Image (cartoon, rainbow, N blue to C red; front, side, top):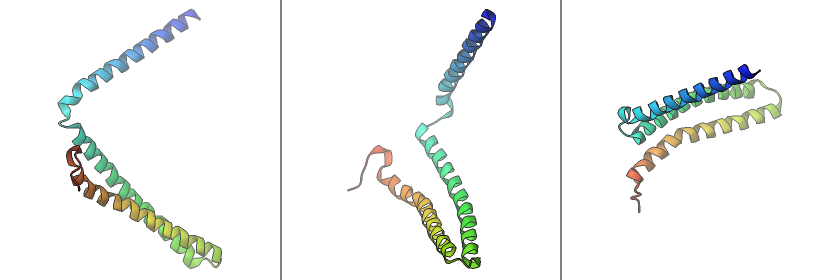
Length: 119
């Protein structure tokens, strides 16, 4: 029982020592590989936004086509009305997601460098 506890304590100490050394290495190497952290974050956000827009377009087209098929085939008026409302929601959500890029592109020059220059 005592040996298991000692082994567990040593493994825990070893694990946290490794985590500390890895963290120190990452922090010390970051200035070497990053010119400007804000430029790096900006490129990551743009990449993520591009992926979200691409995936949302595929999902929107797929779900909208299902809603249109339900709307065309169904004889139940309630199902047709629900499909129509879902179609409207899909279009609005897709427009909002795609317009976020335009909003950011328009607002970025206004607040360039952390200094708001609008008037």
